[in-house]
Amino acid sequence: MRNIRPMGALLLALALGLAAAAYAASWLQQQATANTFQVIVVERDLAMGTRLQPDMLQTLDWPRAAAIQGPLTTLDQAVGRVIRTPMLRGEPLLQSKLAPMGEKGGLSSVLAPGQRAVTVKVNEIMGVAGFALPGSYVDVMVNTPDAENQPVSKILIERIQVLAVAQDVSTNESKPRVVNAVTLQVSPQQAEQIDLARSVGTLSLVLRSHSDNLPVQTTGARKLDLLPRAPIVVASATTVVTGNKAVSPRPRTSRPISPPVPAVTPENVRLEVIRGLSVSEE
Image (cartoon, rainbow, N blue to C red):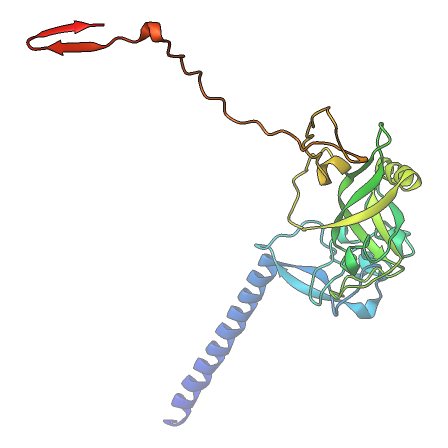
C-alpha cells in the first residue's frame, strides 16, 4: 500500500502535466491562427509572362500584422494566371502582379491597362550601347528639322519603360546587349508621336534612372548651340597697290586718344626780372 500511493500521485501529476501541455499547445495554435492567414506564394523564381502551374505554388501562413493588399488565398485563384512581373521564391502572389483572366501570356499580358507596346528600330548608338534592358527607363529623343528647316534635337517623351529588347522580355540580365529593336510601353498618344517622329526624323534613346521621376523642360539643341558665331572684323575699304598685286591693308586697331595739349604762343609768355630789391615782369 505504501508503494501504491506515491505511484498514484506520480501518475496523477503526469496526467495533469500532459493535459496542461495539450491545453497550452491548443491555445497557442488558436492564437497563431487568429494572428495569421493563408496566402499563395511561389516556390521558385519565375520570369515575367510565366503561366502559373500547381507545382510552382504553395500555401504559407502570413502574419496579419504585415498586411498586404490583394493577396491570393487559394490555389484555384492562381493556377492558369499569367504574372506581369518577375517574382522571387517565397514572394506572395498579389492581384496587381497578375494579368487579367483569360490572358494567354506573352508581351500582351505584361502591358499595364490602357498602355500600348511600340517597337523602335535602334542601332548600337541609339540603343544606349545595349544598356536599354527590359525593365529600365529611357527618354525618347528625336532629331528633325524645325520650322526654319534647321536641324534640332529634342527630347520627345520622358521616362518610358522598356518592355523587351529584340524578342526577349527577361529582366534577369544586367550585361549590355546590342540589338536592332527595342519595345517600349507607351500611351496611345505617345505611340502616335513616336510613329510620326520616326517618319520625319531619327530617334534615339537616353537611359534614365529608376528613381528620377521629375519632368525636364528643354528647348532642344541646334547647330548654333554647338558652333556659336565668331565676331565680325571690319577692315578698311582702301586697297594699296604694290607692283602688280592689290594688297588690302590690315584691320586697324583702335588706340586710346590722348587729350589735346594747349599750344604755347609768345604772347602768353611772361618773364619775371629781379633788380636788387625790386621785381618786375616783361
